[in-house]
Amino acid sequence: MDQEMLNVLALPLLFSMIGGTYVFVHFRDRRPNALLVVTLFQLVGAYGYTTQPSEGLFGLLVLHAVVVFALLLRHLQTPALATDNRDLR
Image (cartoon, rainbow, N blue to C red):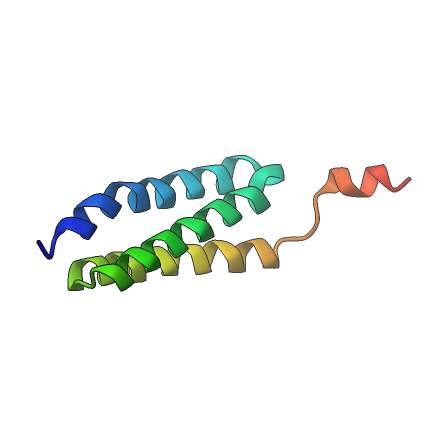
C-alpha cells in the first residue's frame, strides 16, 4: 500500500525529466514552455508525496527537483535568442 503513489508517479516523473531535457537541448525557442511543464510535473509529484509519503517517492522527487533546478539555472544563464534581436530592427 505504501508503494502505490511511487508506482503511479515513477514513469511520469522519469518521462518529464527525459522529455524536458530533450526539448531543452534541441528546441531553444520552446525552453520556457518545457520548463513550465517540468515544474508542473514537480508540483503533481509533491501533491502525491503529501497524500502518500514514502522514501522512494521522496528520492525521486529530489532527483526531479535537481534536474528542474539545473535546467532553470541553465536557461537563466543563456543569452537571448539571436532571432529576438532581428525582430527589433
